[in-house]
Length: 118
Image (cartoon, rainbow, N blue to C red; front, side):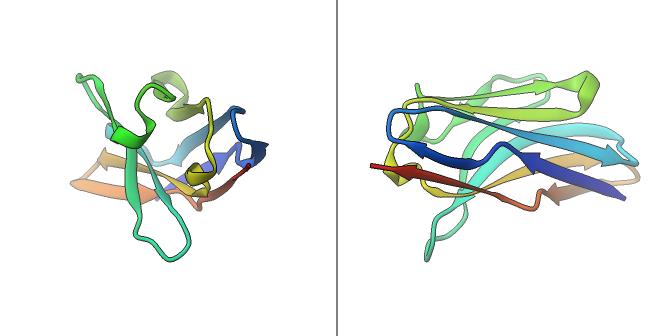
C-alpha cells in the first residue's frame, strides 16, 4: 500500500508565496508521474502541473510563470512552489502519483487548503 501525505497549505495574501510538499511512503515501486491538481468550491478538480518521468514539466495556462513543480527522487517527494499568488488560486490542492508495482496504480494525497486573500 502507498500513502501520499501533503503539507504546506495555508492562508496567504495576494502576491505571496507558498510551497506544497507531498511525500510518498509504503511499498513504492517506480513513480511514473507526479502531479498537482486543485479543486475550488463547486468546481471540478483540474490539473495544475505534472512531471512525467524523463520529460519536462507541463503547467496549466493559469499558473504558467508563477508555479514550479519539482521532485526529489531520493525522498519520493514532489513539491509545488507557488509564487505571485492570486485569490483565484484559492482551492484544495491534491497531489497525485502514478506508480508501477505489479501494475500501474494512481494514488492521491488527502488534500491541503490554500487560501489567498485579496
